[in-house]
Length: 315
Image 1 (tube, helix red, strand yellow):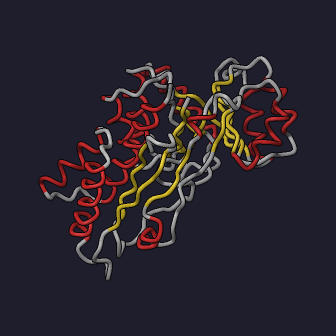
Image 2: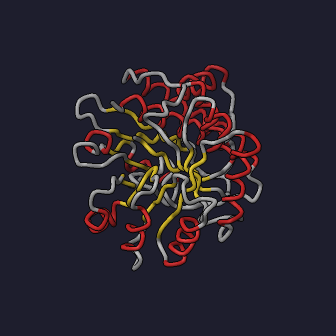
């Protein structure tokens, strides 16, 4: 199974909602969402839409960033209300594990009678001293996913033994400035989908075409870049192409720079016979109309394309 890791920003949640029309296959894809804003209405809307097609959403209850950091009980209460009041029963409480404090939050959850029988997911970003206690708490529990960061994978897989685990990697090679992508316009992204099953993993996870770095807001860019993953039919690898604007001398005319990058994307897609996804179709509409939807929409389409691509290559 593929677990795309998204943060609960507006356009990331809209991306999930719009992929309902694909539709997302619940046997192949289960998104992870790390909430950032105190108002969880947009997450409720996305979860409700995905619930109509049976897709489980792993909602992080102890986020690292944003308004809800250290608000685990608040998020758990939100999950309970969504199920009890609205019938939205596809939200899976998910814990990031990287400190002893995270273990205490998980311990409280597992020993609370209100939650003791509910499925949950764990995402191990680091190995903590309480790992053996975590293994004990997982015994006999309904573990939806046990996901281990690639940096910890060898040590922790040995500790978990027979417990089914999945792999988390961050293959997006983030650059300091958008113009820096000119030096690596096309590069390897991942081939986890090819090998995860035969290597004994239940699934794999990535941070899509965003990367794991948390960046809040930002200034207008000198260069506009569109990131698009695609299947290399020769090797079977997933590669990523960065389409960069040309007139990158200052932060003016973002719309014009978008069209420069978009022209390169459309030419590349046509030249390499890239299958048309929902996102590529929208990119072509913007190209034909010479419309500029805003950088948030550009990021949304890049993520939508990646999720659709990964679903298409999953067996």
